[in-house]
Image (cartoon, helix red, strand yellow):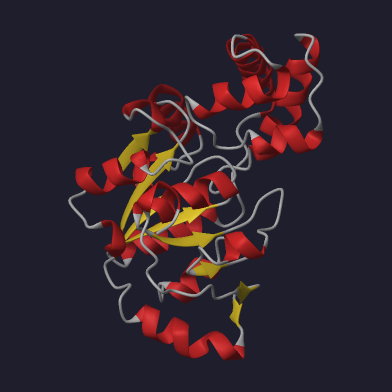
Length: 251
């Protein structure tokens, strides 16, 4: 058993480097490919299909500093994909005040919104191309994000990606956000699929832990930081960018 009661499914990590499979992993991935036809694939949003994690990293620090709570770069990275109540708990650990969470988060949102209004919402390379290929091949695509539904809809509409997804599942729809498994368990119920039959594409450690704990097969596209040895054990595959999904799902 793992954190949050996830069961070890015996799937070892396999890497895809720049879209090319390592020789020793070819057999594993070929076996996996037989199971991926018409799959259900959940995508995290920020850092996975939208190139926004750099902004979050910057503005968590800037907002905290403005509110009188100096935050290091490492601490800002630890906030990635944290849903409530975990974000509040993390701020309590860092600064000794859970109340500081709302103050810092609200200021971070103001800074982030101003940046996106000025420069637009950056999309990850190959996102539209890969998502359209997956849809055309018959795969069911949905979003599972820590971002609230209003902003998720807004961001995906503005970037022209909304029509790629059947459903949008947000952490505000469940009691606990990432890294708890709630959002993925809820997503699987909504799409009427067993977690072990679903794939989750994530960029952050907290997102990976959430999907794995729910029982999903996790494909990681690292953003900002690379997975450590322990996190790699939770992965079905790791790719360098979204193009790597075309190898895994044969599109």
